[in-house]
Every structure is written in structure tokens, then in C-alpha cells.
Amino acid sequence: MNKIFNHKVIRISDAASMVGVPDVIKPSEKVEDYSLHINGNPVFTISDEIGSPDSGYTMASINTNGELKSPVDLPDKKLPDEDAEKQPLSGKKEERWWNTLMQVAVPFFIAGCGTIGAGLVLGSVRGWDVFVEVSAIFVLVPSLSGLKGNLDMCLASRLSTQANLGNMDSPREVISMVVGNISLVQVQAIVAATVVSLFAIVVNTITDRELNGNYVLLIISSAIFTATTTCFVLDFVMVMVIFGSQKFKVNPDNVATPLAASIGDIVSNSVLAVTAQYMFEQIKKSLWQPITLLCVYYCLLPVWVLIVWRNKYTKKVLTTGWTPVISALFISGIGGIVLDQAVDRYPAYEVFQPIVNGIGGNLVCVQSSRLATHLHQTAIPGVLPENTRIIEWPWKTLFFGTPAAKVARMLLVLAVCGQIVFMIVADFVYQGFVTIQVFFGVTYVMCSVVQVMVLLYLAYILVHFMWQKKKDPDNAAIPYLTALGDLLGSVFLGLAFVILSIFGLQYGNNVPGSGT
Image 1 (spheres, rainbow, N blue to C red):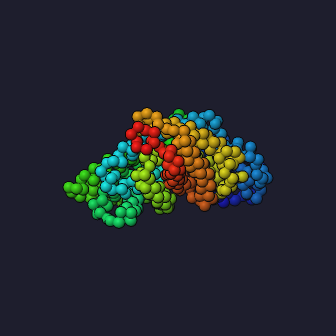
Image 2 (cartoon, rainbow, N blue to C red; image 1 turned 120 degrees about the vertical axis):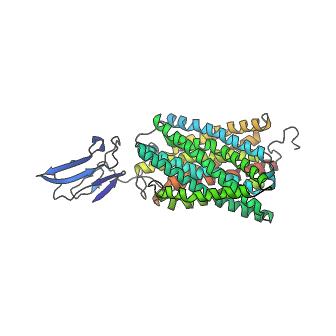
Image 3 (cartoon, rainbow, N blue to C red; image 1 turned 135 degrees about the vertical axis):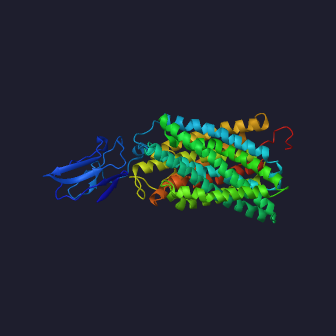
């Protein structure tokens, strides 16, 4: 019979007697095949297929009826909140809070610089001809920026989980894993960009009540080129970050996803703006360039699919990982509609929107990645760890009462401090001097913190729900969370601008020459 315990496969042969079997067998003894003989007959054989000599846990004791039972099983009872919070959320031993804070804070502030740059890029290109003539481009912005969450952060989370499980020690396996995942992201990027382009075209047709065929080619070609190029660059950055994290003994869950976002937004917005403007100028002369670009990418699509299909690490994701990606694109697309409507009504909305969306997405991805890794290390799919519920009270997941609360508190503190810094820096760079008023600053920080609180709470529920449904949170949770971050960030920031405008306190009303 076969038994699985903590991801170790144990094979036990039939035996007439179990007398003399040791109560506890530890993989730390480095026994590959352990056989016990009674009167010359083998009683059982146990093999550790994963071969992790430093797992540091006691596997099980074997009863006389052949069943596995933990020698330290306790009665099923709920732990007090103070004890529940002490349970480690990642790895074999609990990370010190200051180590976690430093590992998260450094890439978080680096990522914040990227979101500031993305906002400034969007603010500077909004007057370009293509953004004025083809308003559907604004609908693409959140969705294409969100691809870093839908695709690249999922890749980072998958590779971080494999690194924490010790499955990235063999060079051959690492190469196979990396090639398969990069090819998978290219497949997803081409398909996702096509879908979100069609969504933007439909929205633009409904709002403008006209359809220009040349603009259809422009939108689709620009979206596909932006998505594939951005994802390709970020994928290599992710691989280097995760290998660097292993070398310097840093938990990749803490650093990989924020660093993925640090350049994701600014690269995505920059590539989209330049590509769309170039195509806009070219279609006035000829259509051969966008048509050629589309033909090349759609011809490469079957090649990427074949590589992914033959890779054992990505074959399953190719057939099952589409629902979260496509659903997240439509959620982000709704955020794009909000951006398209708000950018003409509220000055500098497009400057602060990428910051709010990016920071919320970065922080919730850290929490989601850590929760997923914890489940991979301590449970089997479909079974939640002991004393864990899918639905918890918000304060238990955000402040005190669960293992996730400790990290959630750190992330909320980072959200407050980070948004204050990013808001002032973005305002200074955009205006040339600091124009932030107290009422705007307080309202802005409040809307961004509420967004992060909602996302962290949803992350706890979503990750555990998907695990219970035997779906890998590394593939399924992050797309939904980053898309919801884009939507909630756009809506909350829009509400903040609406409320401030009602009282005449909108951004920039004290800037000389603003006209307000």
C-alpha cells in the first residue's frame, strides 16, 4: 500500500507481523531503503523518493494494523489566538520578524520607484496622438500592466515554491523548469493580449459608436508586442532573483514578486506607448508592419505550445491555468474603463493610479506566495492544515490571531509608510515642487490602505479555498488578486478624487496656472 505524509512517498510491503518495528523513522537518518528482517523475511521497506536529508520532522509511527499515525498527534482542538500566530508561515523554522521585514521592505521600495516611473510615463504620454485619437489604449493599460501579476508573478510564485521545497538543486531539472515556464508565459501572453485587445475594441466601439479597422490592427499588434516583450524581460529577471535568493539564503517568496513588479509597470507602459505611437504613424502609410508582426507571433504560438506540452513542470498548467488568467484580464479591463473615464476629468489621476494599483498588487502577492508555499510544505492538496479555516474574521487575518496576521501587519505598515513617500516623490517629480495638501494626502493614503486590507483578507480566503478545491494557488490565486488590486485601486482612487473635488480640494488646485 502507498501512504503520503508531508509529500514523502512511503511504500510498505505486506507482512505477517509488525513486531519490533521502530516507532519513529526520521528521514534525517539518510536511509534510502530501510529494511527490517524477522526470521529472514522482510517486514517492510520504506523509501524516501524526494531525498531531503534535512527535512527536520518526524514522519510517523507504524501501528500493528499497518496504518500511519503521527507520534505527536494531539486531540483536535482549536489553538488559542496567541499560539496560532506563533505557527511558522514558511519553511522548516519560523523567520524572525525583522528578517521578513527587511526582505520585503527593500524590494518593496524598489518596486515603488517602478510604479512612480509608470505613473510619470503615463502622465507624460497622455497627450500623444495615439492616446488622443484611440482612447481604447487607456483600456489596455491596467490589463497589460496586470499581466505581470497574471503571468510573471505566477511564474515567480511557482519557482519560489519549488526553491523552498528543495526541487531546484539539479541543474538539468532547473533548466527544464525555467525553459518550460518561460515558454508557458509566452503562450499565455499572446493569448491574453489578444483577448484583452478584443475587449478594448468592443468597449471603444460601444463608447465611440464606430469601428476603425486600422485601429483594430494597431491595438492588437501593440498589445501582443508589449505583453510578450515585457514578460520575456521579467521572466529572466525572476530567474536571476530566485537563484540569487537561494545563494544568499533569502526567502524568494519575500523578494521575487515585488522585484517582478519593480520594472513591470514602467516597462509595460513605456513599451505600449512607444509601440502604439509607432504603429499609429505607420498605419497612415501602410498596414504591412502590424500585419507582419501578428503573423510572426501567431506562427510562433504553436512552437511555444509544443515546448510547454512536452515539459512535465508546465503541461498541466497549459490545460488548466486559463480561467484565472482570462477572468483576471476582464477584471483589470473594467479598471481600464475607469481609468479611461477618469483621466479626462481629474488632473494627475493617471499619475497616481499606477502607484496605488502597483503597491497593492505587490503586497498582496507577497502574502499570497507565502501562504501558497506554507500549504505546499505542510499539507496535501484538498486538506487544510490543522486549526485552519477558509473564512476567518478580518482582524484575525490582518492584525492578530492567525499565522498570516504577523506578515499582514508588516505589509500594512509598509503600505502606509510607502504610500506617503511615493505620493510626495511622484508629486515633486510631476510638478517640480511639492504641492500635496493635507486633505489630499490623508484621503489618498486612506484609500490605498483600505485597498491593501481588502486584498490581504481576500488573499487569505482565496488561497485556502483553492487549496481545499485541489487547485494550486501559485497558478490560480495571484491573477485574481492582482486584477482585483487594479480594479479596487482604480475605483477607490476615483472615489477619493470625486470626494475631494466636491469640497474643492482636488489635486493641483493650489498650483500656479492650474486654473482652479
